[in-house]
Length: 91
Image 1 (spheres, one colour):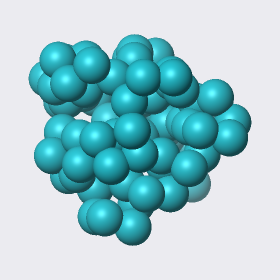
Image 2: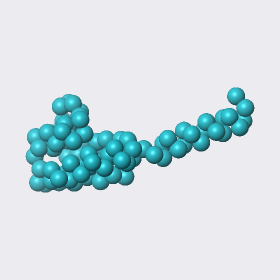
Image 3: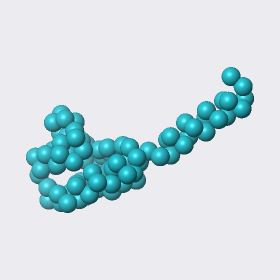
Image 4: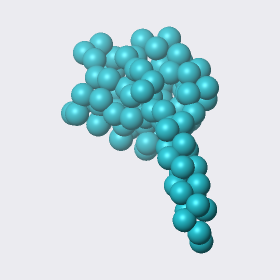
């Protein structure tokens, strides 16, 4: 592989990384574990186990990345979380 090809490949990898966003879910003192789990299953298409693990992480760590992808894919999912009364943002 030439130096030019390698530089081009590195640039493509860097661009791919830059287009990835995350939905971060934050802890609150209002919502129950069941509500958070049910909402993650609905909005982020988590399995029950994934949703439960995220809920536990949010509870003990204060926040958790619940979905990664392109902004246009994450925006409606984040809106569903917010509409359900959860605290989340896309970073």
